[in-house]
Length: 515
Image 1 (cartoon, rainbow, N blue to C red):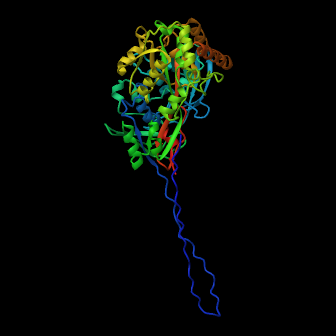
Image 2 (image 1 turned 30 degrees about the horizontal axis):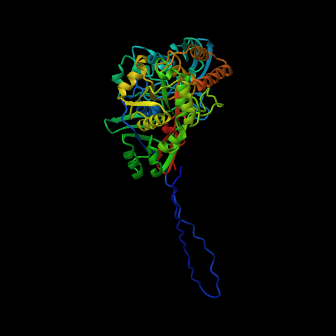
Image 3 (image 1 turned 135 degrees about the vertical axis):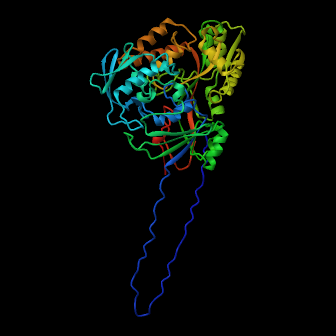
């Protein structure tokens, strides 16, 4: 993609000093005039960030809400955080841990951490936080992320907690990166609707105010246990339309516009982009219909020009999946596999081998949930049709789309979707999308189930990685889905903003600064 470079005009001012002589026989003493002292302008310490919409709550353990996370990531912290470079879990509010046995892990609570009301963060708070989010009666929308956790209790030393799982869990530390700690005294006994517009955390920023329909403000916490951030105040404004966010960015009303359209990149003062978490895919129905045939599923993958779609619709801010779900950096990703390539002739050959006679193939999708989901669905339908599929495209409401996704009796021939993997581990992808017990699976394959079940309990890192790579190879030869595109996160920012976007798509205000 061509980048438009601005031209910096440098104007040089020349000053001459004229000295008058005091006489022909007397040389004046040389004098030096020191330049006037200047004080560098202080770096900007407040920031305005435009979100795509207003959060539904500030209870970090209840909703699955991306707009909320942008705020709560600043106010709350978990026991572990994803390291932006290694993509592994690193200690945060837990100073250390040890595996007691196959089902019990002990976590030492970091000392010197304070809640925003000045009281100490304790092991009792940590155990309460774990038990709150996994309580079925609480009804957390992110409960499935902690499905292996059975409970937590304070250790005998009073400074640690014991987390009990339903057996070995090799990705427990990564699960904990999504489990924010909450203060027991503040949250206990309250329904989630009672803590929707308040927050008590121990992160680098304190929640200050929420002006309904307009903005949320946070300020730096003076007693934060970690490194003090350069930004002391952040305002999150709710601006739904990308073009409005772009306009506000160009006029200086805001400093960051998140999740922008590729078409706007050239007009943004500064581009911030990194490979993101969203992976687009189309689920195949292997329970009934023509897509039960392996050759038909392979044909669909060969029929799509992924690179062409990436270039045309996303201007290069997306990349084709390499014949598998996920991307490089995920544990268990198979680097030896490649994209199927755009080969309509191969697709036609496979369809013929399957005995396809033009039966109708329904492609179900929706519009507006993900970037260019409708446009991409239409383009895929056109290419499938060109290859010889008799495609009927059906767009439905978000609620109907969800109902169809999670009701296997309603599974259409193909269903457009997107998935993200915040744990950077293929267990999360395969458990949800391939295993017969997975909520989004369109197949029931005992061989795959056995591999997934064994791998998610295997504590030997090398063995576990081999199991996932072998499964990826099987699913390349016998695809459960049309593997589409991995999207980049694309944000706009002020020209003087310093920011290195993260691969986990998190935006931490504490990592931002201005020149």
